[in-house]
Image 1 (cartoon, rainbow, N blue to C red):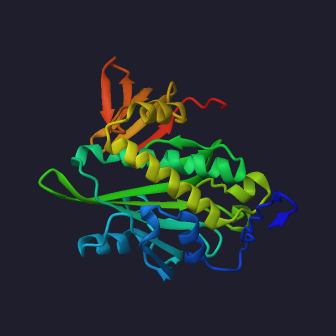
Image 2 (cartoon, one colour):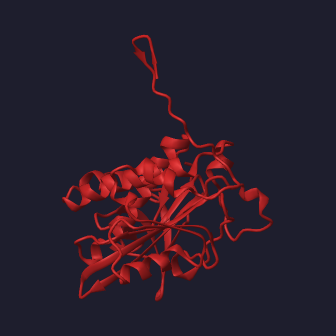
Length: 284
């Protein structure tokens, strides 16, 4: 509106609420020209957003498809672990991508989504989080979110990639009687609810920007950032494999997203996936 010669822009922002579903219309408006705005798929209840996105990918759905749900009846993390989340308070979504890359390069996309999520959370709530390789977001020693990456290949060429993210937003984990691991949320850490639509828009816009940079070969900046954001580097860790365990010092996360550790025999080991735990607990 105009008052004299002064123009005042009034932005009406949606009110955070625990009682309503995500609003695709708000997301679409916020995303603007983003390729994520063109194919938003929303379900109140779904078995798994990753499963739905994989089905869509196999049937030719376009890159940039976003599958969202309020409740997952069979939400999954890595190694078929259950992802627990009450409805209408968190973010549960999957992205469908068709990157022109080889299978061994895909894990870098997991790191990109982690960085985009960290940046979005910081912008919207002020909360700082970090990456626990290979696919989790942490605040201190508590889990804030988890990423599940799945792909389809032809030969060694990627046909499509699905990146799923579960992020604890307006949920208070203390309300749950029992949880299998220590978890937290934006609400639990800051004491404030945030707009899930605003948060998701910020994360998707960040990810799209990073993704386009990555496809042009600009990876050095991201390589440096996902190492800076890691909670494992410099610490003594234990890595579980099908053949046993490897102990050593976490050295870096390479350009493909693999964790490099210097084992107790002085040899570098490149770890692509698996469970890593910190043996020497150090305060952040």
